[in-house]
Image (cartoon, rainbow, N blue to C red; front, side, top):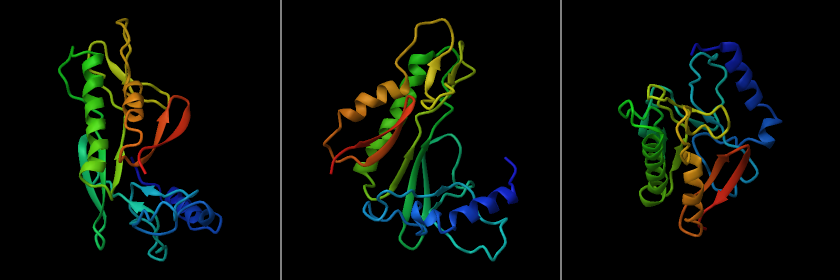
Length: 202
């Protein structure tokens, strides 16, 4: 996608305004504590500042350079703060890659497995780091094709005449609910037509 200096300058001006400081965490390269970020938003940035004038030197939020965010991977690791070794672990596995004819159920299961394995590793392997996971994926070369719904769910679905299968989010919701009270992270889950916040553990 082409870079747009006017757009990026506009975003920078908004994010460094006095109004933005009331709603957006202004620290750079740190998530901070839950208390520090309470009722605030943290800017996750998947682009760099290299086309802005050098005078625009204020930095805020979490920078996740696109050259380090490798496409279609169940396990991406980006160091966003080298001094404190703060890392982002990202599951962005959207091209399942199963053989044509595998069908919706198997494609959905592969995506579900990748997503749940990533969420579990947040607690088991790196409890103090940032984890980002997506439930969206597609296999549009399958017969019939599985494509993301154009709705907030964006999970695999069966677009042909074959019977529908439980979709990724329909499988994820009970999986997450079953872990309530266990040492899981706080998370924001976009489900159906609303935004829900689920708390797992202390």
